[in-house]
Length: 239
Image 1 (cartoon, rainbow, N blue to C red):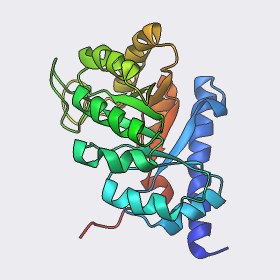
Image 2 (cartoon, helix red, strand yellow):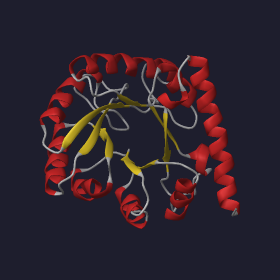
Image 3 (cartoon, rainbow, N blue to C red):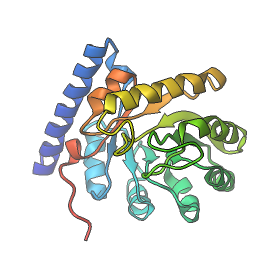
Image 4 (spheres, one colour):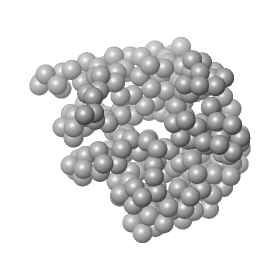
């Protein structure tokens, strides 16, 4: 086993133990939570090692990094998640490899994703990114729609050819009433998810929690956690 593979295996084992312990504490089954490894800034070789170690969900937040990496790993059975803020001029590229876009936060983006998905003859899963730091009608500091804008986006996605409404995503906010209160933020997201599922029963995916707060996300009921640093190590600085 190479040094890098051994390192990633050890890190994965630690993260797995954290998820399993959190599930047990919350009275949940381990299989209720899917680990998504966020591989941004790391090479395709790491993605290949992760696949060897059993990882099947990976995420990227920049198209310029993700597109060549996805091409290099096209032979692997992976589900690719796009989790970064997405500009409409990158949509065509992103829809060529992403299976799920977790950062849908405006109707203009829904329209662009739909057109690209239809053109590429693909069905694209969509998560609405909820900004818990956003006022009504506004977007959050790190993207996302205010909670009162979720239903309008859900209807737009549901009506858009080539798109599938899978659920919700959030990033724990750095400002506002939920700053430093990850568990409260994730509980709020679950409330919004319950309302969404009343009208859109299949939209049952809830993506929340990262390396530092995955326990809070699992306790609240998240179905997917997005972990980068705890698996891959501290990221190299982008020069």
